[in-house]
Image 1 (spheres, one colour):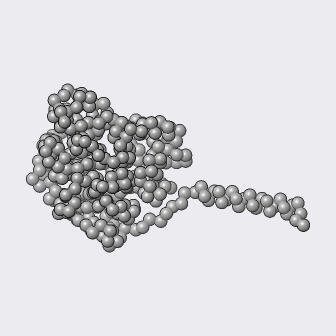
Image 2 (spheres, one colour; image 1 turned 90 degrees about the horizontal axis):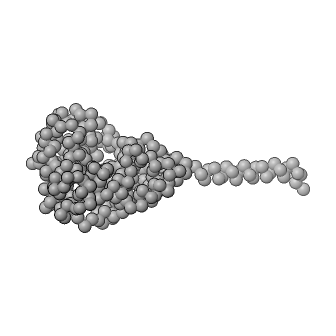
Image 3 (cartoon, one colour; image 1 turned 90 degrees about the vertical axis):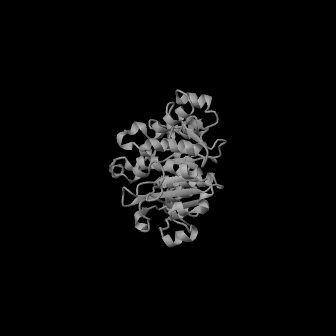
Length: 348
């Protein structure tokens, strides 16, 4: 017969073991990431990091594009998990479109040590994702910004990588058409639009440059060319003439309106479409923290309920972390970039 003291001690062991089991189940499991081996990647994507200019097979499609522009400014190119989430979400929401991720540099990136991209092996498994090199030596030849991209002054700017990105997205759409997305957006829905030339209001007075759609020929190409002509004079301009300000000015002029609000409400005669803030930019720098606050989950849901894309404003939200209870960003990451989130759930 078991004594009272022995029975009590036995129950304590059982309870402690049970609590330990529950604690272990609550700790997020970190899945080991596969290392970046070029040979393995090429087996899946034979054109991996080849020049996009020469990839005629991909040129046939109206694609979705991302551009990474830090290579001319840094020795190591880093693609963080949240940026990988942007790529995965776009690919999953648009399975019939090619998603092209371009690494802009002057020389071909052949050294794996120059690319710090832990989620690359995960993303390359998605059949519609392709990683290519954007060759700065040839890419802008014959465009209004050919000399701008070659200017030493561009690479001496503190905001050079961001400025180069603003230029390259317009050159890309000028040459090939399609949809450009920033690496800090999460795509929630299929990006099908009745007008291929579209933008989204970021504020009541400005369009954003994080989501742009332009057709390869016709008015889309004409609009891109007009914008590129403004970049020719970048040395004499401050930031007010570039990015969102430049696009807004060109849109208002093209639509023969006085304000962006008039374009949104009255249209642009079929030339282009500007969507309200709720479509692409439900948050701004002052309130993107809502997406990381579990106490404001319902407000986050309300704000993204009509969105096709959520711009996460990486520069502002980069240091905000997912901790504890469910947050808006955790909710959309688990749903729209599940593989990247699973691999990084302990540090996302």
